[in-house]
Image 1 (cartoon, rainbow, N blue to C red):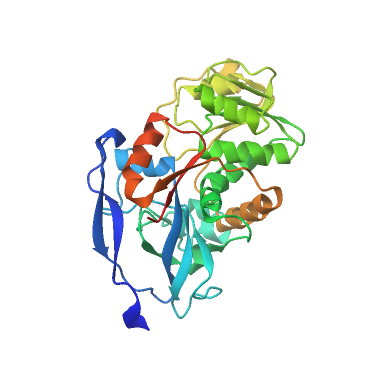
Image 2: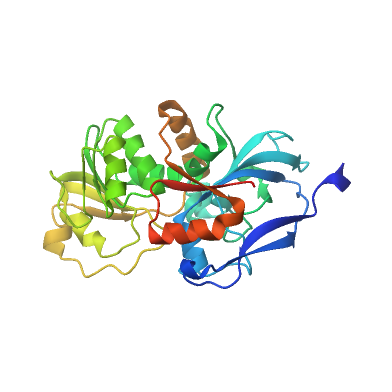
Length: 341
């Protein structure tokens, strides 16, 4: 049986970081190691295109491995499982997300904060990801996926959804509260629906008429430009746009005691803040760092109940470089997803 397993895969790699318009990805055939004891060998059926992939391709995130294959919103079928890959078997549908490994022994791991593990590893940054026909993932960090949701719809749940879930929880929005969302890409359009399902009033502040129209169509109470004031003070806000200049804008829009949660892995520099205008009256600024596996399981369960509408822009796997270029240029709304050719 082992002899029948693929020993190589066609995959996209970041050959040399550069602006997405210059197509920094290259398609290659690279060797594929068989699954280790805890691993799953997966045939990819869909892979979401995340802004973190763009940061890696453009050099905002320093590469951790040479010629890394991006992609950490991976849906596929298990074709082989290691001897210790408990809970999965060939034929199972599986999800692979951003968090790929932790040490399990540091103070953060031991206290339920594995997202802060200093030795954490990430899919599509430390390990090859899902811009490929086949990939390998540690079963201990993979997810069983709910039935009834198509592969291309559930792929964005695996990072855009999970990180939005953590960002919303970090924002500490009170029941029935008023939430501002700055930027309206893949993660924001899922998070807005999660907040609305929980009973929140959502105000979206983003550039682009198409994104604002989508926000209103999904149930937002208002949609304005990113530097506009929302129609009412906010109990909480989430910044998805990787634009540090919007931090003081969002803080100024908070009501007393409000919290701004910054969801991105990369952010341009934050301007000098005024204590009196931006932080006084117990306003809080919080970052979000990756996620825990419990975040992932909890979000998948909650999303399966409220079934968000996923606005999908489909690309064949052979056009992954174009998908990144279109993401950088803002040519689509919602989430881009790669599918096999």
